[in-house]
Image (cartoon, rainbow over all chains, first blue to last red; front, side, top):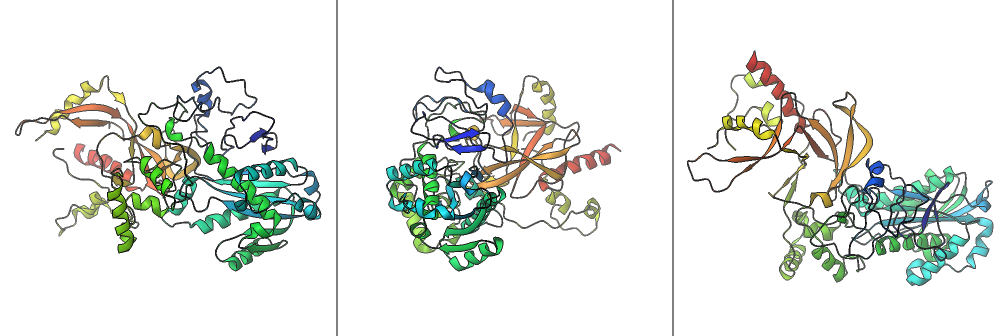
Length: 401
Length: 143
């Protein structure tokens, strides 16, 4: 979980903590499905530091970054692991939402467009009977709010633990890249829909009676609405563009999403500064802070990408490699570009001192057909080509290197 | 031209050689030299097991995950066949033409971790199948 986002491990799982009273504590991401194996080793590996106090949570990483770019303190292996899976944080069921009380639930997302950082999905729900009273708390769509207002509303939502429940889903840039770049690509829309569906399922799995669902959507609202209605036949489903401005549950959800993403970026820890065990790596140049919007249209974002690239690996894991911006810079999908795009790309390359990325060819050949028996090698009338048996196994004759 | 027979001297060179992890990626990387692997390449062990690959202990091999340039890679370990050893060789520069080349042994390995792009590692992966040939070759040539 992003540091400083105010999540605390409790017996119920991760819960949001009040961030006014307590010092910001560093909390380790909750269990993602693929755990790194070296977690047991990390306690030994962590360097001692006088700022460390005995943590009440064994899994917690000790210490925090003193300052970005200065001497880094060790992290836990979990904090510097790859985040390929979607990470769900489900709040405990608020008291007033128990016993099958009909609840309304809203879903919104943050960080869909940027090329940097996670896309975060938020869901908020409360009893239908509490709707009017919660309306008076004054949520508006998070995009209109300033960051300070959003943080304030986040705090308000937190105080209403007895009647407002939530789910947050963190889809890292790695998760997005990996899915969109599969052999059979999974589009961002499909990722979005699957996440929303999973979030609703998890709330229902806790026994909450989700009677009404409101989702903010882009693209085809009608199709999405029908699909959700089919999967959740006992709920009334409404999918609308700008739903976050219309329905307060969606407004609340968007605050959860936006604040989570903002904090993730603000407190971003580059795992590329550490080895797999969490030990800081001695590097000539550290990766810069994410002091840009993250949107590809923002010049500062493109500048950040240029300055923080690596010739072999391309970019650090905070970057969505599936985004056109990233792919153009890496020289991928050039064949798909039209002349205007190609001209723009050339101009950018010439203008900036962009590093020369190492060329990488991905195999996209189809499945090879079956295995060839060794006996076929001895059949008469073979061509001069090396026998298929060896070609299939990528074996070449070598008499010298 | 180098002569493969000269590699016979490798056994003695082997003492004092460090073991190294060798990885095979499912892409052609047009680069020869150092890379920031420790920082950028972060494999994860998963609970998933291969359906066909059996590891040294006789269990179904564990599948690892990693990404390279955003793409999801699934990896498995390939232990080199019996009586086989892997060497990482580096050619020394500055050999006059006609003179034998000098190769330095940098490291040894007895297994390779190979990665597939979005395909679960299996016993019939091309990257593993050369190992069959070694067994066949021994049977044919030593018979």
